[in-house]
Length: 560
Image (cartoon, rainbow, N blue to C red):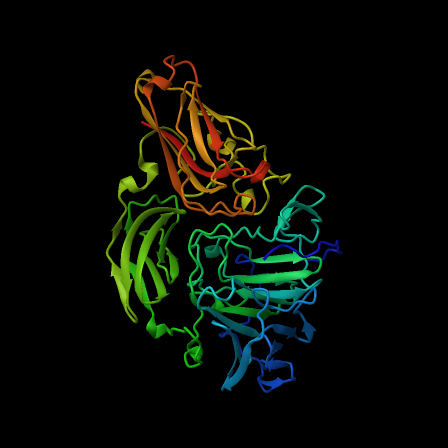
C-alpha cells in the first residue's frame, strides 16, 4: 500500500469530504430506498467479464480470470480504474476460479484464489455492490480492497490528497505543498469508530464505501488507518481488512463483510447500509464461506457503569483472537449493548476515552443475550483519581489537549501549521497542557524542562512521578533528571508497534505508564525556587529528526 502514484498538478475542482460527517438531501441508495425499475436486472458474459446490470443506474463488470472489478458505470459514466489498474483485493489476485449465480433478486459472483474467497453481490433495483472477503490464513496476501476511481471525477485538496503536494518529505507517501501544508493518504483524521462510510461527492453524484463491522479486522475501536487517497492520476477508496501500520493486535482470519460500494445522487449513503444497521437475511442462503447469520450470533448488554468520569465518553470493547466488537456506553448511566457477536469467550474492556480502566471476561452464545449487572470501576483503576501535587493534562489514553495534538491526526510534524515543538513548561502558569508538545523525539525536542515549586512538607518527602504514553516509535521512552542531581534509570521499552506512527497520523499504540520513584534528596529545600524536571527521550534506534526515537504523551503528574 505504498504511495507510488505520481503527483502531476491538475486544475482544481469542487469537492466535499465523504466521511461520517457528510450529509445530503439527495437521493439515498440502500435497502430501504425505493427500488428503481428492475426490468433489466440480470447478468451477461462478454467473454472476459461477467457483466451485472442492477436494474437501477449501475452496471459493473468482474473479470472471469482474476475477480478484478474492471468496470463501474453509473448513469452512463465510467468511474472505475486509473493508471491501467482495476479495483480489487490487495494489488490484484492471480488466476482464480470465478463463478456467477442468480437467485431471485440477488446475483452473486464468487472468486476463489487458493484459500481466499471473495464475493460480489448485487440486489435488484439498488445502486450498491455488497462485498465479502474471507482470508482463511496467511498463505494469501489480502489486507485491503481498493476501489480505484478515474482522475478528474472527485478531485479535492483534503489532508489525504496529494494532488497538489508534489514534494516528497518522507518515504514515498508523505508530501508537502508549496505553502508548507503536508498531505498523505495516511491522514484520514478518523478512528474506525468515527466513520460509517468514506468517499466523495460532486453534489450530483456520490461514490462511497460503507465499511463493514470490522469484526475480523484488528486494532479495536480507536484504530486509525488510511481510508482513501487522491492524486493527479485518480483516487482510491479502501476497506482495510488488516493494516500493518501501527498495529497493536495480531491479524484475524475469516469472513469480513459485507462492505458496500454505494452510488447516490450526491447525498450520503443510506443509513440502512451502515455497520450495526445493515441486515442481510437475503444472504443467509447464498453459501458464503464463513458466513454466520444473525440467528447464529449473540448480544452483550450491561445495565450500567459506575465510577465513570462523566466528562468523558466511555466505550465497551469485546475482543478475542477470532473477532472484535465495540459499543458506546450511555452517558447518563453507562448502559451499553453490543450486538451481532459471534459465539465465544471475550475479554470485555471499558475505556475512559481511549484508556482501559476495567476488564472482565464474558461468554456469548448463539441467539442469546449475556446480561451484565452494573459494572463498578474501582477508583484505583483510573489514574486521574490519584492525588497529585501537579498534573499536566488528564489521563484519557490520548494526547488530546497537548500542543499540536489535534493537527497530528492529519498532518506531518513538519507541517507549517504546527506550533514549535520546543519550549518549556511552568506549573501554575495556566498553560501547562497547551504548552507541552504532544510528541517528544530524541532528535527534535528531547530535554524538555518542567518548572515547579514544592512546599517544605512536599520537598521533605519522596514522590512518584508518572508519565503516560500512548505509543512509541523506535523504542523511544522517557528518562528523567531532577535538578541536575538525580537521574532515573533508563526504563525498559514496553511493547509497541514497530512501524511509523507519529508521522503518519496515529498516536494509537499500547497505553503504558512509566513510574519514577524520586527521593526526597532530589528536591530543592528553598521553597521559593523552582525545581526543574528534564525529560529526555532515550533509545538506540531510529534515525534523525521526526523519524528519530519518539513517543506520544497522555499525561504527566507528580503524586502526593
